[in-house]
Length: 427
RNA sequence: GGAGAGCUGGCUGAGUGGUCGAAAGCGGCGGUCUUGAAAACCGUUGACGGGAAACCGUCCGGGGGUUCGAAUCCCUCGCUCUCCGCCA
Image (cartoon, rainbow, N blue to C red; front, side, top):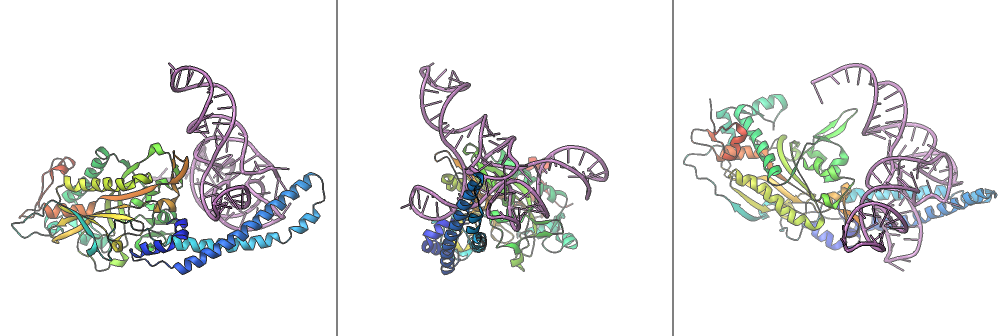
């Protein structure tokens, strides 16, 4: 959520900067509602003030044993007038809140203009795509040949966009998770967290998935439970600090979490239907930070470098881009995408997305810290990034480490997590 | 699933219809004392909204109701705890 004060005082510049995200702010509507709000609020408050003072004098009169009947006559219709004013103000307030909850975060100055991923700005290319002396296969073909990566069995159980893994592939998948968690806890100073995979609508509103993007989520809607499956661990972890005031000595808070993620992929029928790239259920290791406002840009660089560290340790070639305005997510002010080289597709594909949300989520969640300089609670800044998407990392390992006979060399860094195994081959 | 007890400021916890945004303690901040620190003592200290300010308003788990007036009474929902039953 944007600062209502900013909207009131800087409506034009805000609208201008939001347009870079492809969002058209209805300025007329906003100004109209704001003017109504102001007059209604003034009216309501003066009625409340009148009620308070009158009631107080009734109390005093009664205490002194005076006759309160004339006073009661005076306030006879005050209650009704007040109730009506309060109700009007409430419904107007709600209308404005709904509007406010649907406005995306403002892109940072450093975000390039553009409306599609072609305008993303490349900042780094790391490693070189390997040259194959045979025709590189994609992970689906490799998995078929090796066994252990089975989309048909999953389709039988659950439909399209699911997978089952068995044997060495399943172990490699688990090893990736263990490796990433170990790196982030032992080297990068994150606290490991375990979280619910089902969350409430309030929680999703805190991070910005609701109310606007309900169709992207899986929902449990039974008689006693209205819950959503998390689309990313960002949702439960960031909400750790909702409705709380964090002591400044405890900042920054850095959490790493492994969870499954569930996405309905409602808007992407026909896209990436082959393989592991786009699944309804996938594993992700997520990095989340809550920091002091003045430290969030530095934190974004660090968090991104932590995600990059995994790719580098696995020796996977990647590029780093800044998302342009049109490609930027709803809650983010700036996002780096890390894109790993996939020989099977002959292109770079997103494997991590690292964002600074500034105070956008914190305002929705009421996540604050106490600033020792002012001794006042102030909004935190929140950040998150994949460190990394596990399914896509598995794809990257299989495709980049394949050999002519279809076997897969296990990167050194993963071997301790795979009982020392160095090669996956068909048997 | 059954029975009962709770939910109050950063924390603990008093408050059962009127001057209560709320005692007290802890914690925080400022000061006295001290070479310095601790202890002790004194003072101060909730959040949010509107306003240039004075000031005004809202907030005692959420929502609704009764009343001139609600932290306090009623209804409802949520959560926590205790006991019983069931259970990975």
